[in-house]
Length: 104
Image 1 (spheres, helix red, strand yellow):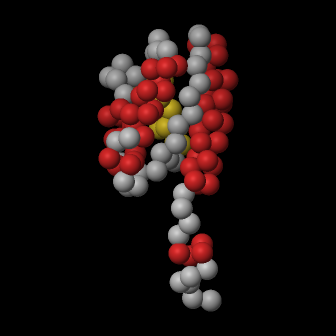
Image 2 (spheres, rainbow, N blue to C red; image 1 turned 90 degrees about the vertical axis):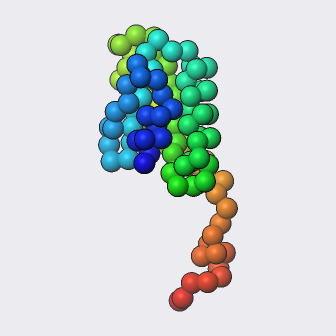
Image 3 (cartoon, rainbow, N blue to C red; image 1 turned 60 degrees about the horizontal axis):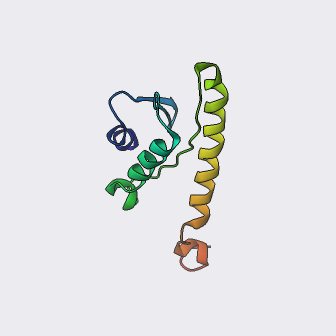
């Protein structure tokens, strides 16, 4: 489902690729960072993400040329993990986290 959400948010000229279990890389050729941010915002507001069916985090980084791609992918990966951590910290605690409800 995450792949469908991601693919629906990006243009046909963008390259969407699974790079690991639940990790994807998206390359937006000749795209300004502001456009990438808007695309991510649009992805985060899609119904599957908004209602919690899909948990998704993005990291945005820009390469000026193909020689920078390796470093750019590494930077975007670091930013994605930072975003994922921030999302976990901002989630409301469930009953099991509040001491009510589990069996000892």
